[in-house]
Image (cartoon, rainbow, N blue to C red; front, side):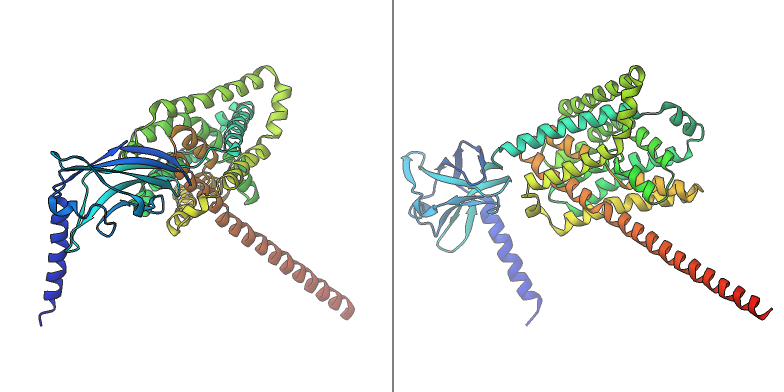
Length: 450
């Protein structure tokens, strides 16, 4: 028997089913046609079936043939289908109605359809649907997290304004090769890398691609200075690049969001929140300006603020990530190999590209370390801040999982390098001690012989 005969029958079955589903004679109307519910709560919805053929009328109250089905049962489900009863409301229009309950399971968006089977087991799915948005219940801890993030980010930017050393920046900008390389890596390569990774890893989950893109366009993180110092990089260059990166972000982040980012918003069927993003970006300028004024008119206070800038930056990142995890343990239900790979991939690409670009332009190893770290470490706190305040729920919650993943994965390669460095230093110390000991023994032997 021809092996392609089975393939022919399978294709014929699929095409015939698709044809039958697309040629639905009856219509469904949901009242309301879109609902928003909280997880573990329910909402009653009315459905009206009109122009129902006579051969299907007898099947309406048989749940083996007629069902209300959620597109994604993990997000929302139709409970107690056996209790759903259709009643005739208009003989002339052959209309029947019923009431059913939709229960929220997990945050996200899905649809509910009507499916009718005939006695030959051929399924027809309604061309109309009910849009369902499922949100998390608002809790006190969510408000505490939101307000504390606002306060910490505000204080950080006041400190940052007080710490900006314009004379150091001017000195570095006289030979701006390092900052120019870092700027290109940070605001050209990283956004494009984040966009490409999003397309590759999240082709069907555009909200996750959006979260990765927001992370990729964020400025360098405050932890970059700490890691540069630990790994023997040029700390002055690192501080200057962090300053330039943070200031440039006020222009570069909205630029990327409103251009390339708008394509992700379109795929996710979301409107670009121009006003919110612009307000958030402009809002960060106010504490920065306050910090500059403190530096100008209250230098003693500015010195105190400069001393606490590094620990405060580290506290901000740790606080936002840890609090985001504790307050939103649902995040780990969303973790998948794609999210873990995105969390590892984005900083790894940044480190590698920053290092290679630096070496291509013949930068010293300390400068290359500073540029690589500044490129790879993103200020995930700013990404979470913008996503939380720019997007409506549940998108704000769903997109946050990616910057949290990036924040968790970012230190691992740097920690590995630091451990290798420390091991090499210990080995070299042991070697030098052994060499000194052997030289001492040799000198003692020579002296005894003489």
